[in-house]
Length: 332
Ligand SMILES: NC(=O)c1ccc[n+]([C@@H]2O[C@H](COP(=O)([O-])OP(=O)(O)OC[C@H]3O[C@@H](n4cnc5c(N)ncnc54)[C@H](O)[C@@H]3O)[C@@H](O)[C@H]2O)c1
Ligand SMILES: O=C(O)CC[C@H](O)C(=O)O
Image 1 (spheres, protein in one colour):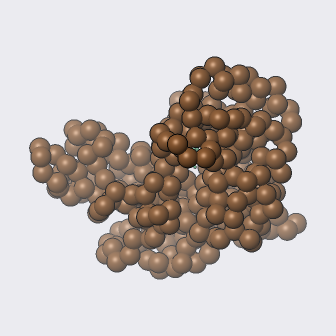
Image 2 (cartoon, helix red, strand yellow; image 1 turned 90 degrees about the horizontal axis):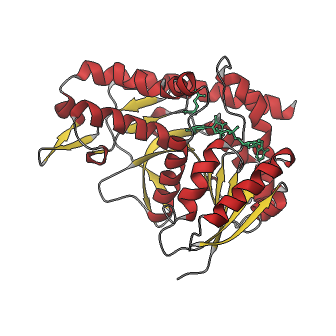
């Protein structure tokens, strides 16, 4: 068995962390032979709640969990970590606009970028879950200049999982039989769920999603809207933001990053745009990626249809606007 790695989860006393910590500590993310020391960061008023979470982690009696460090001090939380799940931020509640989150949350990611820069391992892999996730990841990367920019990513895996689940339900196959659905752009209602290159295994055959669904109008309209609005639908029903599914997706994202993608398959991640597919550069944009040896690469050369091209433009425009707003707030 290898030496334990240090993994930080911020917002550790919150909803998403409550599911995520168990997923990580039982070995679903870094593999069954990788022991861990979990660093749990939250704000001072939440230290009592965090104590309860620490008790429960102990009571789970998980063999891979070699230590737990609960703290309200970012320097201690980020010390020597190899992986960072940045969950801690305010979630949107009913009646709040997504833009309200920008002013509430963006400064957290400046502080945490600086703390990562000073205290984390230089090859730390950072996943931003806290919303607005793409722009928060951009801010975090900017304030951690000693860590490579490609080590900062934002979560669109929940959108990918939602899209896969919609296609599985429509075609009557288990969700694992659906692959290569793409999420382009921002983790917001402008995101572009795109099944043009998706595959569905049905009746022993591998089909395109278009063949399997046999309803392109559904794929180009209702499917896209359902996935774009799924987070809001969960908030309306639960009166709280998605948590169990968000935790599962965070685990999936980091697992793919550490352990790689399967041959012929790709996953979607918010990464710093290099301008591929005519997207704006220097925003964190979700692309399809393949991953090998801990390094992601944008899948190139896909032929994007006109319908999707226009949607990609709109989500890119939103990210450019968010970037301007975020840095205006930070620099004010
Ligand atoms: N990217 C996605 O797909 C996705 C999906 C679901 C939720 N989210 C976002 O994840 C975030 C967390 O959601 P939640 O439901 O767990 O919220 P929550 O309110 O239950 O928990 C958030 C926790 O973060 C803590 N926190 C606040 N500021 C902090 C700071 N500076 N440092 C450390 N901890 C801090 C809070 O005290 C709280 O315990 C929200 O912004 C939500 O919108 C993203
Ligand atoms: O605030 C929202 O609209 C979405 C919350 C969360 O990011 C989700 O996708 O479930």
